[in-house]
View 1: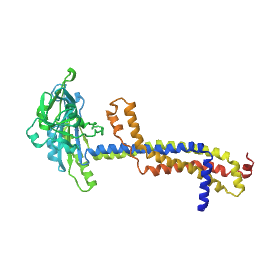
View 2: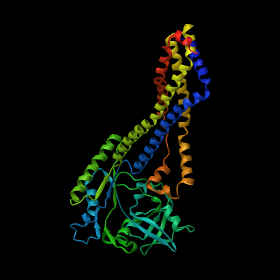
View 3: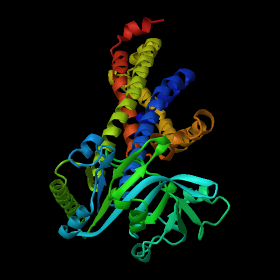
View 4: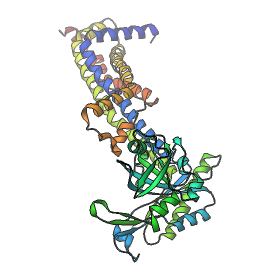
Length: 459
């Protein structure tokens, strides 16, 4: 078919559709919202995946994280010779020593001990996470200093009573005073404030062993100071609301940094091999109970990538159903159009139009409907980000209760930014045009198979 005939067919298609503007517009709505929902759903999937991968990357692609996992009290106390109210579990000094001596590919080990405790400054107080750590903790967790200094080697060696406050803890304890040089009280002991960290985005829970963490309410102590002042004999005692409990833990976490290589694949293999060695080593040392978990960000990244594709496939399939429904609407309208235009079809056949001309004309109309609807849907899909942000602001200010977005699930909704995937645009548009073709074939063939004489008699 020549270009002039194609142009004429396209012009006739637009002219026919514009004769019934409202009907054509309503028919296109199914395609518009179908394309929009495909792009929006895939954008939400990409945004959630990006957020998950960022959380994993913050753990460090060359790191291996070993966490203490609290077992049931009965399991932890059995065979220990201690009373049942003492829960002994987790990583020990012997674990740190053995890992340091046996892992040749590890360039650094960062032990951490943490508890939840109330810190006070005069009448101000904050329920904080007290973290005993080493100087390497700052870079390992992507923290930055706002003012002052972080824990240094001399603080560790001297077991000095110094603390570094996270931004949120500093604001609650010192709302109108510069915290540097002041003292905070923790379990009756005074600690000098030597620094304040910048605000840091809270992390959501990752895997079964990594809970979400809000770094903005942390208070950091030198690890040796922590062990000697708050964790004497590795025993931390708590008495909330008149009850009594005690746990014996040396380290809540040990982060191992694997030596970097130039080849990414070799790097990943080295991290995974080292993680296997860590698991076997700890399995020999912790024979009675598995009170630890080995987390490898490399493995979590692969899981996040797999989840991304599963998420995209599921959401994309659900959204594609609306496109199919829109295609059914196009078929319904085109079948009604064939009935309305029976006499027109008979006249065109009498003037020499072939069946293929009739099929081409009706298929062009369905493609125009689905194509224009697809383009409008693309425009709406590109507004997914601003639309999502507007809904989030509306819900936060007028629908949800204050603080509802501070939970782990709420932070995911609060922090997630939908990302429109470039590949989803041609995919959604192509699918919309294909829907128009598929659902336009039957009405077009029905129109072409009308008997010309009978069609001319139709009133």
